[in-house]
Image 1 (cartoon, rainbow, N blue to C red):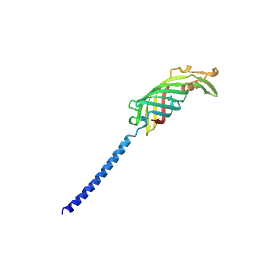
Image 2 (cartoon, rainbow, N blue to C red):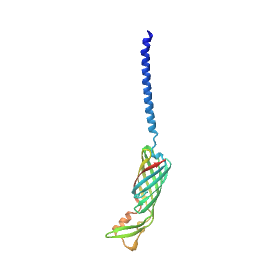
Image 3 (cartoon, helix red, strand yellow):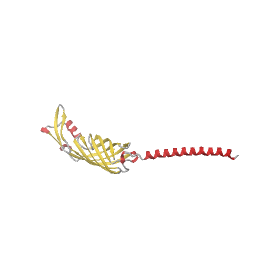
Image 4 (cartoon, rainbow, N blue to C red):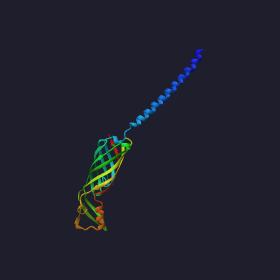
Length: 209
């Protein structure tokens, strides 16, 4: 009489064990998936950035390249270079990330540096004529704030805004070849292309280990 009552209980116990194994396997798989997702690093965890950059009074000029090396998640040094409105431009930069380069997928930073604008010859359209001017090399101090957002493990984008100060006086920063007198319009165009003023820039690049 005991065997018939034992067999259903054994079957029930085996069924419960199978359910428990399935639940345990599902929990283990889910935990593993979550853990692996949490260990994926953003590009801010890498040390060396290279990017294409452009903008107004941007460290890399109107168009150029910039490179940044992070010694810690909170501090980096870099260099940018390209073609600006005042000739070729080279900019050593220092950047501080108060919360880290990969904080909340947005690395808030403060950046400062020195931009050296090499100047050189340029043709200025002045009415129906073209005037040749020689622009003097000009250094400018800049400071800006920005955001560095990573897209996956290696790609990133940067936006920045700030202010640039060029100590040279605009009227003494160039010479007109041949002694020609520029019209007020041509002077305004030339002075407007000199370094200094609002900084607006954006970059997109790749981060290496």
